[in-house]
Length: 280
Image (cartoon, rainbow, N blue to C red; front, side, top):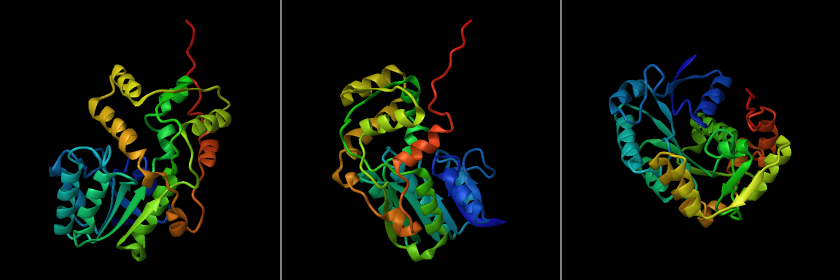
């Protein structure tokens, strides 16, 4: 059945999973994406009104990240418009240990609209659906800060938490921090992926400057390079981001998915298999 719920970022890592979570509960949300009808485009405010009209609850993800320039202003404009159009509840996906993300949180917290903030650690899926995937496929992984511990969290857990708090007003007014169940390093991760995918992966510990230069040589867009450098230099090293929380267990009543569980499931899909080059 059609509902009065809008999922912004409906084709993204968490948004697509929130949509599936809602669909599994018999709810067909309105999809907030450029390809949807009506469409929603963060870069075109003319699309916002039609996408939000008639909506009572919204799940908000900002692409590529709440830390980027312009994100705060966009969240401010969206929150104001949502309130004007009668939206009653906002659920924002935020980043754990990100100062800029917390500034965006405050806009929603002070809006006068019911809200829940889902503050997540780095995603497991960065290794299978994002910028860490290509090095895995190549077999040569070069990363800085290889000994920093991170409580990687699974996007499936994020989505299930988000869908639950979206529907359950018992979590109104709360900031829920969610992480995985263990602290692991990049070296640990490469070992786990190598074992579960039956691959031989070479890990190279490099400096952040070398990593940034490598991205530039690969002609990765400047805004993406800036964001990744920011995440490594400011977020990864934030002591708050190196703490395990019980947010998943608190909301879902079960343990968060471990990286090993994620890796075992993902390896079965073949996404980490090396690309076969046909001989001419």
